[in-house]
Structures are given as structure tokens and as C-alpha cells.
Image 1 (cartoon, one colour):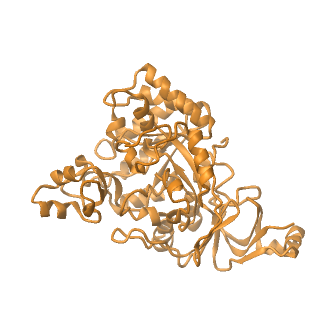
Image 2 (cartoon, helix red, strand yellow):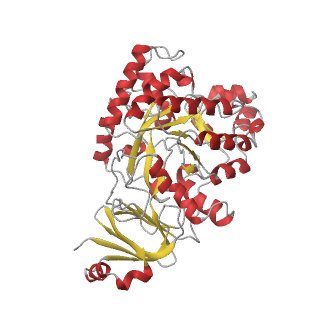
Image 3 (cartoon, helix red, strand yellow):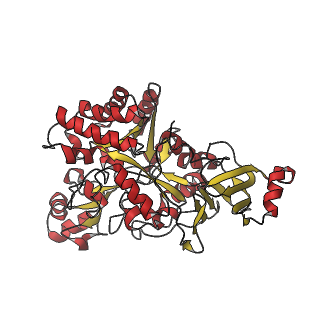
Length: 489
């Protein structure tokens, strides 16, 4: 047989959370065909036969062989079409991204000028009337990585609700549910919402349940940017949990954090609530490994305490890369007024404290998601560095996670929670999404001052069996990504 790839003698971290072992991983086509400990190699007739076939061999001694990382929280919906080499993600070892988060998705909106927060994805790609159309565009682009998708509730509102300052009426709920049904039939993972944003803030629980129930009927999940991550965070978590429970589907709390100086330390309250809710329903959360978030410019987030770094301003593009307080001082105005002048645009908000971030990362129900914004002129460094940062900071340097735990939070747990059953684990018959990295060197290099820098230590990445990236050569010409559809739990 031909076309086999032999990943030989590495530390195999299989994505299940189980301890690692020294062993081999074999790939053929788009599948993993064997995983076994090195001590079994000589006794395996299949391995001997494959070796005689002169496979492409990669010596992985001293390196880690892991499932390709799954970025469960992205806004890469348009990026995978506009820049299909996807260097910021594949260079981290990411082989699959989940698009359509926070209620924001390209489908099913058609507009040349999307309002915030849809503008986070850019303004040139809103032309897909159905998720099926978007999936076809992904497959035609053949990006370097796989793309799975949630359907955004805010996108549905903008398409169907006449007045965004009120809940949807019965007719509008039915129209949103019909689009949700089409999306699920086309392979969507489920529904996302972003009731934090003004365009969706007026949505009530009956509106959300009406749409989420359609996702539930077809085995989907509900991922939500909750209504309040500041003072009202506990109430907002309860609302999200109640919505998922009424609709009958699993809940994912997006980028769980305690934001704002007055909220620091409150993970000591929120995480016990997560545990209590998880005893009543299927629940998980994602987290990024930074103390700053990034979103659209909002004057209500200007508190005079936290630092705010402008990453994009439509009326003042020269402001990108500068802090709001410096801009305000230069203009002779307060930070609030400066923020209003800079809109529309985006910013990084240094809202969190490190001990809270550490607790969420360590929690057994948390997965890793970057939440990067590829449309920013100067994006948050998480776009380029989130996954290596977890390994460098929270495994190797701080010891918050074991290596197996860290990889599990990026792979097997993510695939299970988001219903991508043939990914996230190194096992026979699974998709050949694999990363080989140097455990001593892997680290993020992107910073807030220089945010678009490739991470170090990610030596090779296969996507559906295609070698798509090496540290030595960068993104390779053959791209192996595809649209990934929901699979039964």
C-alpha cells in the first residue's frame, strides 16, 4: 500500500486526557490507521509491512505528537475565504476552527454594510443566504484548516426582526427557526448568541428558546456570549443555563471571564455555579489565556480604570495601536468622549486579572478558544498565539495543567462538546488532523505591541492527512481543509 506517513517515536498525547506514551502514529489518506507504543513496533506485522512500503517518515523523537488543535471560539468566518492559507491558526497547530460565535455569522445575512457586531467579520462577505451556501464556499476555497460553524442568533435578528429594540414576535421567531433548521440540516454545530450586544440585548428567553429548540431537535449545542460579564454575571449565567435547559440542548459559556476591576476575584463565585449547573445539564465553557479581551468599541466599557488599546478605528485609522487614555489626552477630552469619536472600531480591554484566568483554565469543564479578530489592523495577540501560550505558560512554566490535560482541553474535549466525533483524538479511524511540536520550545511570540508573529516550536501540521505547515517552510502549497459537519454525539 502507498501514501502512508509514519510519525515515529514521539511522545504521543492522544487527546483523551490519558497519560502520554512513546509511540508511533500512522496516517493514510485522510485517516489515522494505527497508534501504538514504540515497544510494540517490532511485533506488529502491519507495521513491518508498512515500513517495507517506504512510507514518508518523520522522526519525532523528543517531540510531541498530538491531535490537531480545535479552536472552539473564533471569528474566522470570512478569513477562511479571504486568506485561505490561515497562517495565524495553522502555525499554532490549529487544524479546525469553530466559526459563527457570539451570535455573529456570515449566513444568512446579505448586506454590503453590516452593523456592529457583525462588522467584526468585515464588510465584504455578507452574501450567503443559507449556511449550505457558506459551507460550499468554504469547500471551494479549500482553506488550510477545517471549518465548523454555529449559526448566529444576532445574524438571524438582523435578517428577520424589524425592530431590534424589542423581542421578536411570533412570525419573526418562526422565520428565525426556519433558517436555523436549514443550517442544522446543512451540518451546523448549533446556535450561538451574543445578547451582550445591543443588537441582540432585547431578545428574551422565549425568543432564544424558539430558535435553540430547533438546534436541540437535531443534536446541536448552544454557545452564548452571556448578557453581562461584569456585575450581573451570575444572573446572566443563570439565564443562559435556563435557556439551554428549556430548549433541551447542551450549553457552552463563551470566553468565561469576570470582567471589570469591581469583578476581579469573582471566579470564586462563578466556577462553583458552573459546577452546580453542570450537575443539572450538559455544560462547558471556553477560555482564552490572556487578561485582555477584544471587541467593538463601546463607551459603556470605559471605566477610567482599565487600559484600552485601540485596534481599529474607521474614522481615525491612525489610532490603531494606541491607548485610549493617550488619545483622549492628546485631544483634550475624556476617555468616554474619545471612545465615541473613534467609533466604529475595535479595541482590547484589559478587564481581567490573572488569578481569575488561571482558575478558569484549570477548571475541568473549560476548553481553549482564541476569540481572535482577524479583521483588525492590529489584532489581539491571541489570534496568533493562544494555543502555544497555554502550553508554554500554563503547562510548562506555571504547572497549572499537565501536558495531557492541556492537550485534552484543545482537542478531545472540544471535539466531544461540539459534536465533531471523528476529530480531536489520535486513534485508528479518526481524521488525520495531527500536530507535532517541540515541548521545550513551543511558545507564543505575538504581543500587544507586535501582535502578528508566528509562534515557535510547532514543527509540522497535517490536516486531513495533508502536510499543510512546517516550521521550516511555513504554509505549504497543498491545503487540506474542508467544511466539517456536525456528527452524532
